[in-house]
Length: 241
Length: 241
Image (cartoon, rainbow over all chains, first blue to last red; front, side, top):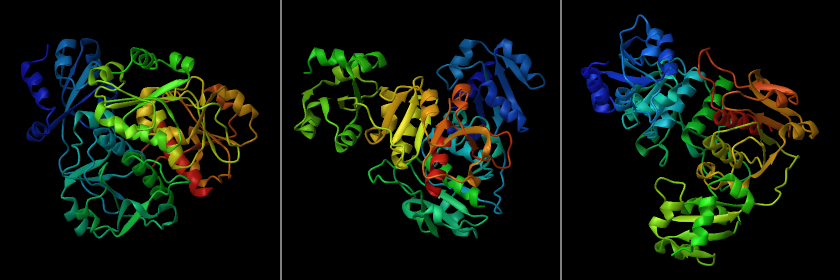
């Protein structure tokens, strides 16, 4: 059975504070762990039921009981295996391609979906404002399906980054100009804002071009969710790029 | 306090069987109810805490206690008001515009998001295969944010509908042709498939053109969620239309 040291450590990793202190995070489920392994990430530890253990031969692993896993899992119904990984060190921002920037995105499911979109559309660099939800939050990781290993994610002072970049800065605004009619350059920064309040005034100052997804025929429709809007805008950027 | 008859009826409306028997459904929260009222729908009954009741003057309403609401609500944290509405009778399919068709979409959140997308992109007609999740399911309604009042939703034998329509039928497939390079006609049917299995063989037979959202640089990315793919494809259709 798993050592108490590991159980205690993993419990602490539910909190951002301890994830940052240890520079460790955990993911759950064979599929998510496999995705990280395929991307060349090495687990610090795999904890798994006996029947799963052989799958992780060659990695540092320990057997865990269903009861122990339930006690440390972030899932209502834990699915048999949990892997602890080191956070990558200093991922690089590639200014030769499009960069996605998030200003205060709070919902873990939205961030997870956005990371998957970056993976799909080949956006390697994701810059998150420091008040954006932590990408190593278990709920975010559950929604990324392993894509997190293929996207460089940096938490930074977003207003400062935008002031210093030489790339053209685009931002999604409800009253922006029709994105379908815009010329889109080969590289740039696309900024998406908070779920309720959109892009903050401080970040807005650095935005050279406000864009929007046009709404059809109905002026009372609910605005698109930030992850959906990100998907549609990245599709436009890749289509034209 | 609310009559027992209503409490019992609303409890039964959690189940599709009783919703169909009574041709009634319920939505929760002031915002969702207001959206239906604004679209001209009339509630059969509003049940609300005393403080909310004045907001629904002129509609048949009754006071409900927090405890009673908790007992009949579909939410973990009920938010003070619940409205019972009649299902619309025989909504019309408009074959002069694009129609969205869903083949066995199972997740309530996905259907709710897709209904919101129809509203945003002005798609008036949504045809759901009979095995698609019920659009009056409380979880779907929670995700539509009232958009359901502005989209005509029909449950039908999808293979039969597709065989009989004179519109060109497009379907989303992982190995379809690049949607960015397709000519898109002024009207047609776009078919989206099940979350795990995609479009069924029976429906596939009626599909004239298979389309896909191209993936960039990374061949191992997780496929896009069906709601996200629907959003991106509807954006393409509206952009070109």
